[in-house]
Length: 460
Image 1 (cartoon, rainbow, N blue to C red):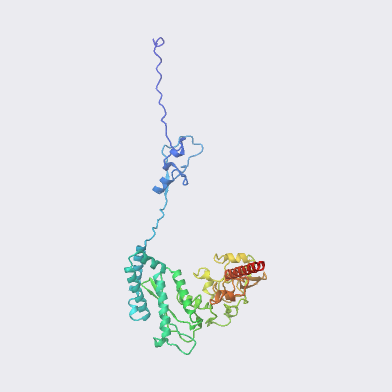
Image 2 (image 1 turned 60 degrees about the horizontal axis):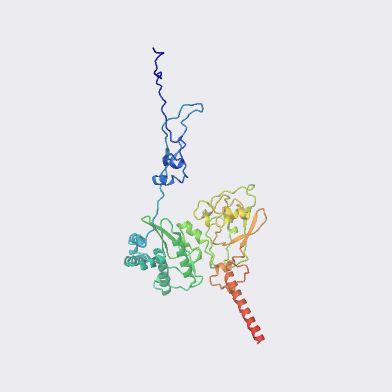
């Protein structure tokens, strides 16, 4: 009966294997994929979603599967993501917000010096100026008034200028018997209060230095005695440095480009700054109580800021690989230490470290690498302000290099503030070349105009 049955033979049921879906293995266009399946951090299609969430998926690891393993991979795909730190967006302050911040800062300064102002007249003047400025800012309501404050610059800068001006007026009028004019050429200075922010406001220090230099030009080269500097911290926020009455026995200094009043550190930096007061022809005498054997007094000489023919010799080598660097010794100037905050102000031919990034470029360009002449400590060094725009004039290739002023930037033209361009006798001077070329052009135009008039008159 089974053979003769007309119905088709029943096929035995066979289970169909389950399809395993892996979206990462399908041939789906990349633009249709979810951003969680995109492992390219630079993909422009999914960049917006990744930036909004701050997550950037990473491709999953192999999990140790062998190359001979032919079994199907697991169904789930794990996407590893790394969170990208959000970049803070700083909104610019408005004039009103900046004014409120300045008032709070000035009020804090007043609170810090109020106690000391009861006994110190300079602090009293400072407190009075600060309170006046706070009152002015509180009364400023319009935008024009607030803009005037911004154009003036920092309040502490203007207050410092007023203090210096008041000190000069008090001295000229002889109000205090302690600071009256004497027959001596040495002028005792009025005590000056300098305020410095905790993080070091370089712009404020530079502006104060320019104000002191401008005031010193009124009397032209006024010699004073080196003052003692007192360093005091008030609540850890403001440092006050008071210049007391000068004492006898100190070296003579002048107000100059690098005055000791702009020192960022206490006594040691002030002493370094005192060695560089040369801007108007007055040179410091270095107070060194050490023995003559350990001193390098012979290698350091004064620089005349108006002499264009002077030269200096530095010891070094042109083959740094053959002549190793000389280490620092006890007694060296702290400026020779590359970790010193003022090392960048050192003249590059004084830097003994070939790997110093501040002075690496001029050493390579000049093929001159400074070395220590002998084992003696180097106590006195030159800085850039003492040798502005000095260049290597001659190097014998062995040990000695001669440096001198750059002909394009003569010393006299840089330091003589009252010098007129007509007094300049340097053909290569880049300081006065604009005025010279302008005068030459005007002279040529005048000659051409006179020539045209002569030709016109001759025709008539």
